Length: 336
Image 1 (cartoon, rainbow, N blue to C red):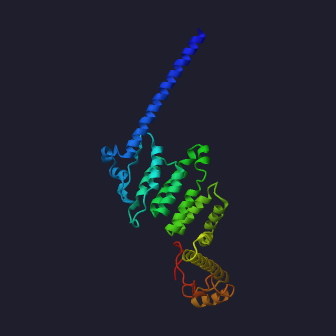
Image 2 (spheres, rainbow, N blue to C red):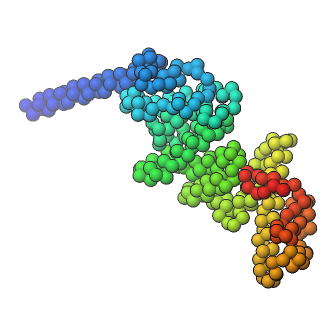
């Protein structure tokens, strides 16, 4: 009897498991068909009033640019994904990668169509590291949508700082093992697309503070930390890039920028040293006294700057300068 009862229990259990598997399979199939119908545009005509312009966006062919009003409602997207938000984010990522580049430069308030897809994917699955990392570079480099790329990577970086620490360590060490690269991408976009070395420096310092950051980043972060180090750090970054630049005009432009940053750094250092010299020698704050002090101080300097210009001094303002024609580089330094 015991054996028969055990066999019946096993049979009933197997039947229950089979029914459960069948139910799960049916539900999965239904969800899959629902997503397929959604993606294929079968449901979109009925949902267009709810999704607004997103309905037209899914149908495409739409222009490769969009405005802020084309942004999707994440709450509706999450509901209509039928519990498959991560799968929907995957699809949106793929959809973004096949978008054409805008036919003309984006105007203020415009976004590339791909940035609309990636913005929604980011909100559906904020823990999707590869999408944020690669999507930001794709938007900015391939589609010339710097604002879209910067917004995407910035949101991911904020999520990294505020939410990632509460996730399992195993997830952090596998899926987000290169988390330090997000502020590096921010720094790249600020530096080479926005020409903003100050904001790039902040991002590099943030990347350098990450425990898994490479040694070169930590060294670079320390340079930005030091007084006047922004010029030296900028020149160092350009020094890394020059060998990889295409010969001709692109490489010459980088060489020029690096040399100008070096001269700006020389001027900053001379100004600091001369101010200390005036204080040490207790020079009277008159043009004549400052001019005599400059003549004595200049003897300890190299005769020319890094670009061959001669050092100059305005005794009235106390400003050290150079005959080299200088311009701002990455938003720092003063032109003359």
